[in-house]
Image 1 (cartoon, rainbow, N blue to C red):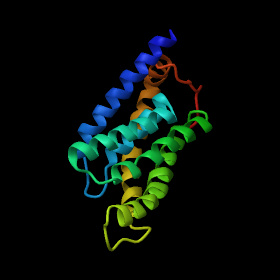
Image 2 (cartoon, helix red, strand yellow):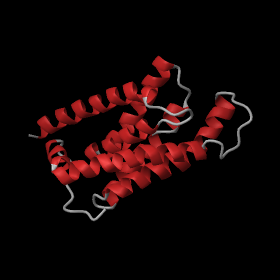
Image 3 (cartoon, one colour):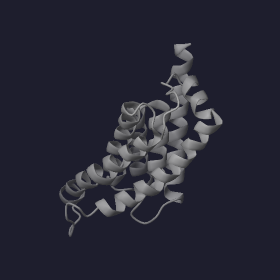
Image 4 (tube, rainbow, N blue to C red):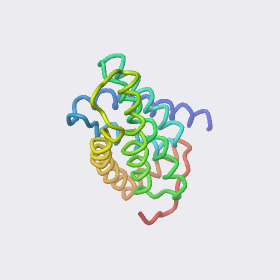
Length: 177
């Protein structure tokens, strides 16, 4: 049974990576990528923090290689994906905490880490250390809101628990938010 859930985890991870690569340039606002945050939160809830980190990393690397996206594809995703999964687990299954983890991880930590990467490594001039914070927070709030309503709908229909059970993830009994 464990082998089957491991295979399902890899299939789900692969589908989320493919979906993230395909929809991120299509459903995008200049300077923001809300669908990447949607994918991060969904992956964090379904598969956990380590898989969410791997998913965000793979999407970022593929986008950088195939689409010429700057390193923001990584710095703006990995911290939020990881914290989303950690906050979800620490709160014992509260979806709002998964969104908050994404906002803090990407909107604040990822945005601040993006400054030295873009200024010193990538050579972008005219930036301050808070330059990316407003854009990243707005993007995470948009993607996080979409993810929250999507996952809430799955939870109400019982599908979220079914997915988590199939994937061998922890299922939380009736969290309040």
